[in-house]
Image (cartoon, rainbow over all chains, first blue to last red; front, side, top):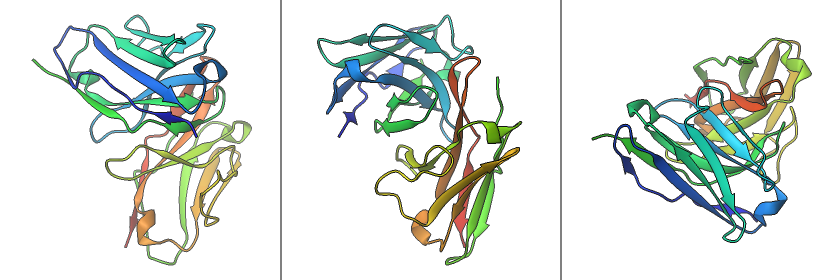
Length: 117
Length: 108
């Protein structure tokens, strides 16, 4: 059974870079697609992007230019960086296993990241 | 990008049937997936590919998809079904997942 757990700072200052990591257990990171999704407080789900083990990525156009998803096969984990953050980037961030052109079948528990000085 | 629309709220009495819709242009030509999210928890996939139930999901949950509307149906609603429900499709042109705005199911 695949298990995911987001980790990273819960507070980031405006204009700085948000960085989160998602270690994967129960599966090889090379076997699936992996994604990040976020949810602002009290609001709906917002797709960030996905990555495959070969480095193939795709991002939500609304975030392109600020977002990078990468992976580390030696540590069986993948990561999210989001630069130049503002208060609008305050959200619960979820890492997830995705079926491209399909659904998100496994979610991490989520981690709240607040952007504030 | 593709847009899907959900009613913000749906109310139903216990034991009755709840229907939550997800509207989009020719959504019947896409695969629709549904997630249940309870307060403080991550979403859980309850229906995939229009009407497939993942392992562990009650038979009371079902889905349909035709024309411009997909529907999540919850039969014999229980208090424990109270949650936010999100539909999701894939926008194949820009290769991203698209979520509906979510529907809050209230059990009266």
